[in-house]
Length: 148
Ligand SMILES: [Zn+2]
Ligand SMILES: [Zn+2]
Image (cartoon, rainbow, N blue to C red; front, side):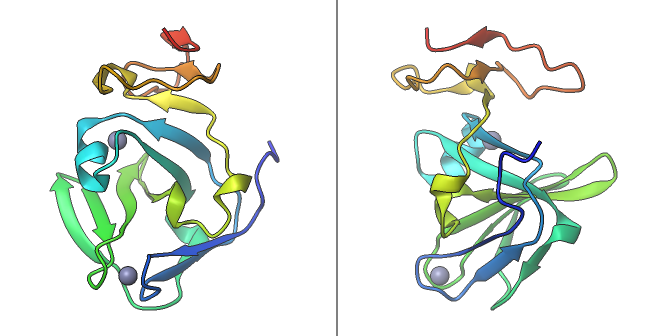
């Protein structure tokens, strides 16, 4: 799959935290889970997920909040911008950057909706992407395609 650019850069609102990724993201998804919504303050989060080895933080280190066992949510300690969701996945650390922290989010359209079962009842998107009520595992059969 070469849908996405093989490099990306981004950062927070004030510029204190900057990062670079030197690969394509593994995937880009809408996440409707309660934890992402709380962490971002938005009705839905979108993140581009990378392997930790493909990511470098090029300015100050982000601040970290451990939101649940094995899961960290990071943000800029100066301006408060939510930066990433970070978790262990199959023995590796994956870093999902919230899409609007990317300098060029237009290049990273989402492929799917996850945790669609947690979404705010009045919110849906008008796209025809697959929707997973939870988090898809190895078998990626969507619960629905397109809005209700
Ligand atoms: Zn900042
Ligand atoms: Zn989430």
